[in-house]
Length: 165
Image (cartoon, rainbow, N blue to C red; front, side):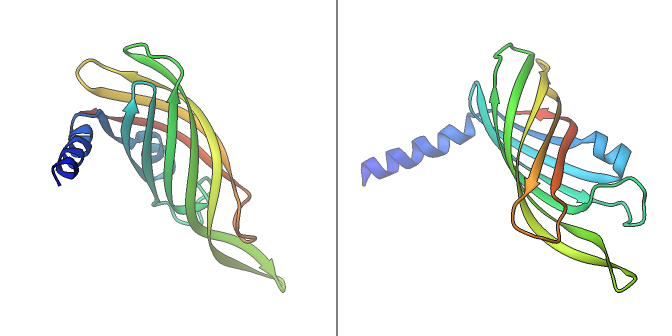
C-alpha cells in the first residue's frame, strides 16, 4: 500500500512541476473568424503533447473559410533545438473534424454533413520569452482517412499567442 501511495504521489507531482502552455490562435480569429484554443504539456525539454480545439464562426457562404466547422486536434511535438528562446519543431497530429461540403445531385446543390479523422504533419517555430509569453507559428497538412463525403486535405496553420506556466 505504501508503494502505491508513493507512486501516485510521484505521478501527481510530475504533472504539477511540468511546463504547460495555454494559447489562442490570433490568425484564425483575425483572418477566418474562427476561434482555436490550445493546451500544451511538456514531457521533456525536447518533446511535448497537446490538444487544439477549432470552432469556425464564419458562415458557410463566405468565400474564404476552412471547410471544417469544428476540429479537435491532439498532437505531439518534437523540438529540434533547445535554445532558451527560439525553437524549431516538427509535429504529428490527428485532426478529428466535422463540417459541411457542397454536393451537386440532380441539378441541385446540397450541403452534406461529414465527420472524419485526418492524420498529418506540421513544422514550425516557437518563441518563449523569459516572462512566460509564448508565440508559435506553424504550418502543415493532413489527409482525411475515413469518409467519402469529407474533403481530402485538412490544413493545420496557425499563429498562436499564449502563456507558459
